[in-house]
Amino acid sequence: MAWFQRSQTNIDDTRPREMPDGLWTKCPSCSEIIYKTELESQLYTCNKCNHHFRIGSKEYIEILIDKATFVENEANLTSGDPLEFSDTKAYPDRIVDSIKKTSLNDAITTGIGKIGGIEVTFCCMNFNFIGGSMGSVVGEKIYRAAKLSLKKKIPLIIISASGGARMQEAPFSLMQMAKTSAILAELGESGIPFISILTDPTTGGVTASFAMLGDINIAEPGALIGFAGPRVIEQTIRKKLPSGFQRAEFLLEHGFMDCIISRNNLKSELTIILQWFKN
Image (tube, rainbow, N blue to C red; front, side, top):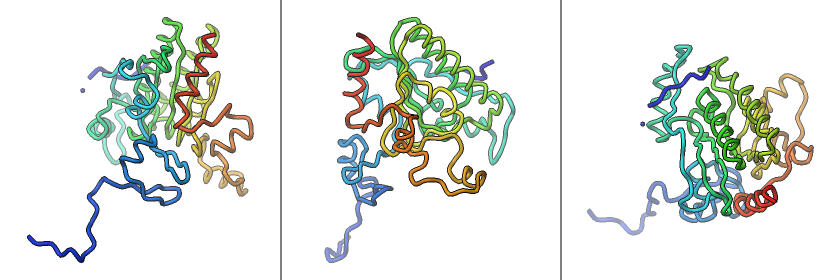
């Protein structure tokens, strides 16, 4: 069962001048100071170390989808409160706060658009909405997106960025792992391509379900990908983990990824992949 509802003087020139807020940002990887306009033109990647900044569905749609072709669907689905859950605040209040903060109704945006002229069903998670956690709405929207791909016989693309299952929905959240995996199996049986793109971070129940089930699994450089966090694993096995453990490059080396593609090349590479599937 899906738990959701439909909703919407004079200045001393000798003193150093302060930079206006919001014009510059610092790379968390190499500490390079980057002008924000320049960062946007580089698709939110650092020109010094190639660090990929976390971005949301709005930015990915602008980067990947052909101009003026994206049509969002299921935008009004919002989470209910099946468990009447409360931690530091009540779950409905947390949802309302996240909606106000992000102008999104939940942690995933879905719709139809074109990449290189090829029509696709497109899903993109939003990490800034409760850590991109997967609740009933995320599972339901992926399910409906996959059903739409089945109906229209067009490829499905999902961009993942998640901390895992949404604890405020407990078992209803965990059910989405099976739900999304089942519909992707139907997609595979029908020969409809599913391309999974894993970004930083993709963890927990999302990694343990749909994110790793792509016909092609693509990662962005340096993305953290795994189930449990490295610290939890080290405490459990009482051993030091290898350098780079759970990063995209480590997973590619050990056969868990098909390729790593920089954001600057992602659209062109996706177009080639989609044309290959089409032929």
